[in-house]
Image (tube, rainbow, N blue to C red):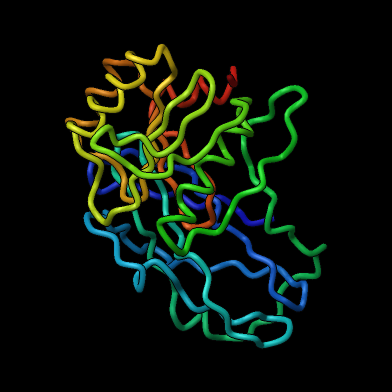
Length: 239
């Protein structure tokens, strides 16, 4: 099990206890991107796919694979990229002998009768929509489906009692996007939920808090991270 490391948000100065993700090498051994000691997180303003992956060498078999770069969604709305120790990542240092880690394991809050969430690795915009849809179904929303053609409504996923927007762009989700999604939810008497790959603009986050609209940041493992109280509440209660 990886140990928590302290990470301070450069935007709001809030400190987080962060556990670097562990991935399964094809040989079955766990691989964890080594964080740079005393490194300073960088806020992701515009995401690029090239910067979203980091090469890490397996300490057991020596295989060098690319894995999602460690990221953290702060409660202030900032999405942070955490610096990785490149030299350590490329060194095949033997790792402690532990059971192989299932890539589908997800440290989501425990909810009675809810199985572990199985994420979808995100490499394309379509993957982001698939991951968000799977997460909504995990929360208990039945028959969630992607819309065939996205319109000005900004709705990407629909199901009985829920509408969702999935923003896979390289810029933080805007205030207009939040308000448009909320109006669609209001019109359809449905819960509106927003997922973003690059986080949320400050005014968008504030407006979502006022409206009680759940916000989630998607990391590249396909695991949504809640960034406001409404999202935490939705995880606790489900659909």
